[in-house]
Each structure stands twice: as C-alpha cells, then as structure tokens.
Image (cartoon, rainbow, N blue to C red; front, side, top):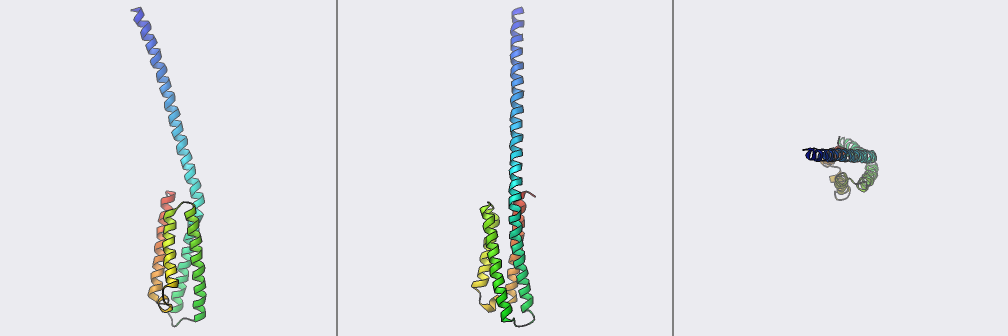
Length: 168
C-alpha cells in the first residue's frame, strides 16, 4: 500500500506540474492574442489617420463640383447664358475634374479601391458631360440637375465607403 501511495504522490505531482504548464501556456496564448488584437487596432487606427484626409479631400472636391453645377443652373435659368460666364465654368469644371482624379488616385494608392472606383465612375460621368454633350445639352437644366444628383449620390457612396473602412 505504501508503494501505491508513493506512486500516487508521483502521479499527483506530475499532474500538478502539467496543470501548471497548461495554465502557463494558456496565459502565453491569451497574451499573444491580446498583443495581436492590440496590433490590429493600432494598424486600423494608423490606416484611418492616413486615409481620413484623403476621403475628406475627395468628398470636398465632389462638393465643390456640385456647387459649380448649382451656380451654372442658377446662371442659365433666367435666360440665355453669357458666353464668357460659360467659358469660365468650363475651366472650373476641368479643374474640378482634375482635383477629383488626383484625390481618387491618392485614395486608390492608399488601398481603398471601393472609394477610388466610385470616384472614377463619377469622373467618367463628368468627362462625358464636358466632352460628349453638345453645348445646348450641357446647358439644359435637366442635364445639370442630373449631374447634381450624380454628385450627391457619389458623395453618399463615398461617405458609406469611409464608414465601412473606418468601422464608424
């Protein structure tokens, strides 16, 4: 019986040692998981800090373009538009399209394909408006209203893409 007591004591000590090691392993694994979660959160925060100004710039460019279209609509509603005013708007639209393109490129380089694709589609629509339509079609209030709607829609999509990207 004494021999068995010694054997049980050895087995008990071995089980206790294994239990201690298992507890230690679980602590190491849970600390590793916490470190990984902390690192992932830090990376997400760094991405947000880097991308937020890019989204804001792109959305700002889209807003400025929408304001240009609204001003154009107000300019042509009372009567026939002045040619000099229209030339001024033509240059303003080129500048706006270039800013949207530059902002969309920066967003794509930083990794947000969804936002860049949305801005790219909008840029294509702006180019179509500027190049493919006749001057009369471009000045039709309906066409201008359509472009304002497209700009608002693009802005909403970009805001949603930013929310999805930043988790807010």
